[in-house]
Length: 270
Ligand code: AMP
Image (cartoon, rainbow, N blue to C red; front, side):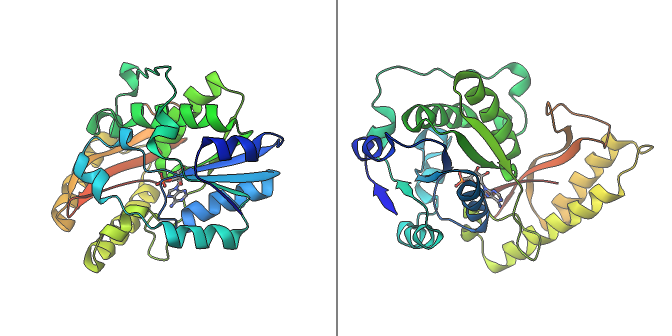
């Protein structure tokens, strides 16, 4: 495993490689990331994993500061997986390119996390554009856990580059919590709550049927969850999985939720 600390190292390592699989991460790796990496190792000749906590996608400085970082443990995990390259860029490696990249979301994209985290996806799309330009991968592996991110990045990146986005299933623990680096910020009781909320919504989704007044049902469910778990909910919505529009049809739809437990923001979809 080669560790690439800057763009000179990176260019040297990648210049005569093709069929490169790229797994972008912000580190604090868990089994969710590992599933993406294993898929890349299966489907690519060489796999490169980046670890970069991207300041531009944090709409809150405090959140950026307290984002979990665990580079030593991450490198151990990556070495064991036999990843070919780990890219650990500094801020200047990503943002020194003089060309300005201005990302604008459409009005219909300003929903869910785009509505509640102003500037977040613009930051994500910018960093993914810069990383794709620098690495020029054949495939980029991303998780359905961040479904809105996955669709937006796919649209922007595939429009501008040859790289293909490969979507990967959400990995959950035995209590059904979607694995997330942010889970390390939760205490035992909050983790138990997050698991109960996930199981609650999995059962809720199974019970949905055509003839129900879904709008009303979702409003009631939101109220119920808030009260039962003492959480702040940004959104709880049923949306079409192709275009992320609100829908009353259960077919090709997912429940999307964004909420806070003890000031830690979690998102999931079912
Ligand atoms: P992050 O380090 O949180 O920016 O995530 C890096 C990549 O891992 C993104 O494409 C995420 O969607 C994906 N990912 C994060 N958690 C999970 C999970 N539980 N299951 C599958 N993919 C995940």
